[in-house]
Amino acid sequence: MTIPPQSCLALFSVLLLGVLSGLADAVEWTFDSPSEVVSTVNIEHGRVANGRLSGWTAWDPHFSLRVPKEGLDAAQLTWLTVRMYSSAEADVLDVYYGSPDGRWCLGGKLPIRRGWATYRLDLTKNHWRETRASADSKQWGGPSKRVNSFRLDPGNQENRYIMMDSVKLEPASLDASLRVESLRPELVEGIMAEPRGTAMLNKLTAPKKVEAGEKLSVSAELEVSAPEGLAKGTAFVRLRHGAAAMSLTELPVALGQKTLKVAADLPISAYWYPGALTVEIGCYELDMAQDSPPAVAEIGLTNKRVGTVKPPVCELRPLGGDAAIFVGRVCECAGARVCQCTRLLAHRLTGSLYDARPMPGFMYLAAAGLHLDYHREVADQGIHLYSDWFGTSRHSDMGHIAPDKYDYGEYDRYFAAILDVDPHAYFLPHIGVTGPLWWQKAHPEEMSLREDGVREPTSFASEAWKREMGADLRKLLAYLRRAPYADRIIGYIFYSGYTAEWQMWDTWQPSRDDYSAPALRAFRAFLKNRYATDERLQAAWNDAKVTLATAEMPRWDKRRPPGPQVLRDPKTERQAMDFYEFISHMDADALLHFARITREATG
Image (cartoon, rainbow, N blue to C red):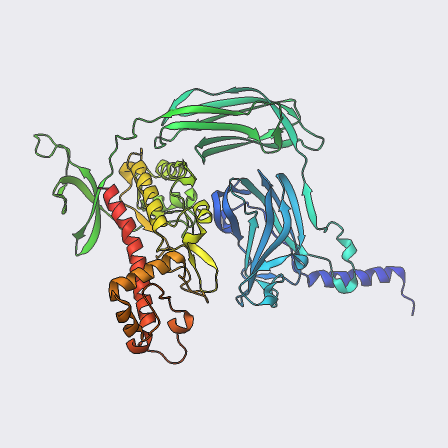
């Protein structure tokens, strides 16, 4: 039978429409709304604005994107396209998926380029490498081909400014059975770097000094050389206090003219610590010419509040049958004929009179630090106590950002930013004491050790850690108690350990800790204090060969012997019993060490 050409065309159209109707639609994130992003980690400020997710990277930055309720069909959505900017090169664009069945994997193969670039990746050919699930998880979507968690890691390197413009998942072809992949020739793996121009600084205008609470006016004139196709860009005016980016102004600009003028009025918070501010002016699409002077100026910041505002008096007192937080200030006019103190209380420890008010003990914290949109929303609902984290449970520098280099700019940025949107704010900050990554890398012998030989963060038994992080904590507290925002900090919560709750690092892992040299030394000291002699230890452990100098910590088979277990038998399990009592003391001793320092430093 012969089919007329027009009938063939109609039949093909019907078939094609049928194929298209069975395909998954492309899923695209354009960052037009903060709701597209579930969370950001190690990206400061990590904000979604003007159609971009942007911020400064700490080590190992990543962000999770909101997926449809039904999840993603990994069998069809196999191509990933990302347009992003990075201020410096980085190792690799990693992709993470999680499936409803618990499988997950992380992997990537495209390096991060400097500047704007589009990255296109065939997820079926990605280098999937990291998983704790089964080996068949090393494929896009796992065996189930369903994805309910989707994350991107835009390179591991820190101190980069990144901007995510768009992320897209789409099918590879119309239908593989029809062999029409050639209809999608644009789907080719690789990196498409966008052209960049150059700029020469002609003039930068900025004052020598500025007072906290005022506005800072700055401007620059740049001579621009832009390649064909680069007609517009984004200029920026960035203000730094040490390593911290305190404010950022971004302006859309045309690059078709030879001269680019950039100007901004920057508000200076009344709560910034005095010192040197650095203003940086530039354009993300332009590199400064090699013979150009840097578009950078230093400005001296003064602040009359520093050292003059005092930390508040704070204590827990009963109120209506429950404990309440009372916050106030020492009353210096008590007993005078005229006194402005209206509610005097005698401090239960010192006896001094202070003017105090009860405040709700309801606190707010945002994951990964400062998120002003969330903090502003909370303040609008009448909540004014914030308890955000500095650092993570696994690493935190307390301002000791490098050997012999201290910088507390991130603390100033956090406290000032919230006080600028909520003048009634009080703080009970979480201070991480685990130690900086650079310190951990420099002292591997002080790290916790799992039975399988894997190193974890700092051992709670490390005397070097307690000594050096204790000194850093003292320095930080001294700084905060003189800060322009000192009168808003009511106390401190210091943390370390797994999930920041002072748990052993591998509490929930198949292989447990701590078998490090510091822990072993501390365990033997614990045994010596308990048993005093080898003979008493040998009798307790029912082991004629063990000595105080050679005693080892029990391995997993003795810590968790097989079979039904209710209570341990002291006659046969004393080694494990001693070990668990030891690690409880080790943990508590570390916690009390930092508690004593905090108590001493805060009076």
